[in-house]
Image 1 (cartoon, helix red, strand yellow):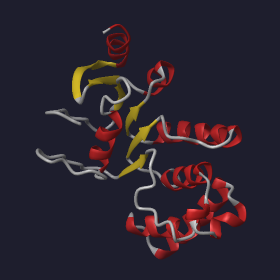
Image 2 (cartoon, rainbow, N blue to C red):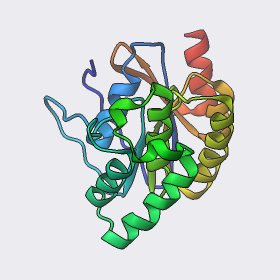
Image 3 (cartoon, rainbow, N blue to C red):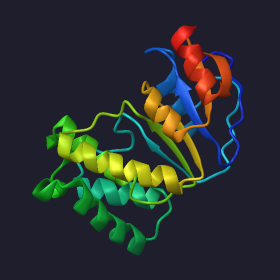
Amino acid sequence: VIDQVSFTINAGERVGILGPNGAGKSTLLRLLSGIFEPDSGTIQRVSDCTTILDGNFGMSPELSGRDNCNSRLRIAGLSTNEARELTAEVEDFCGLGIFFNQPIRTYSSGMLARLIFSIATCKFHETVLIDEGFGMADAEFQAQAKQRLSKMYSASSTIVLASHSDSILKEHCTRGLVMVAGKIKFDGTIDDAIAHHNHG
């Protein structure tokens, strides 16, 4: 899916990834985050990173929302007390009520999206990798999520954002990578990248 891509993202850069559906944007984010490993070549990561993607990677369907949250936070290197405190914050933010203590296999896709988003955004990270196509639930939670994302964008030093929204890309990014069929066809300012993407 990704073919001979090579680039560097420096600390503090705000990079937008553009391209049509199927171009490889989501796959590239998964490679950058370590969810996928490349068949060839190498990826070097030198900062603390979180991902907000459209999947439930690392989640156990038989565990409750609470246990999944605690498990992911412990894997991320938090102490028992830190994980417990942040799990309480996740419980409050995601608004799942009694379902937070139920197995996530019983969740609707919207409930699962709430949980995953809440876990991914409960702690500050130096680098944030986000797929703007990440599915959200109802309008009320979408509004909460957008507010939280804006705070994350402001606080994080490095952002890599895949989006189809020109306005979101212009607001949060300064550099743009345009992908077509698994290759990077353009790398430049976000305005030039948007123009290249829209007009070819």
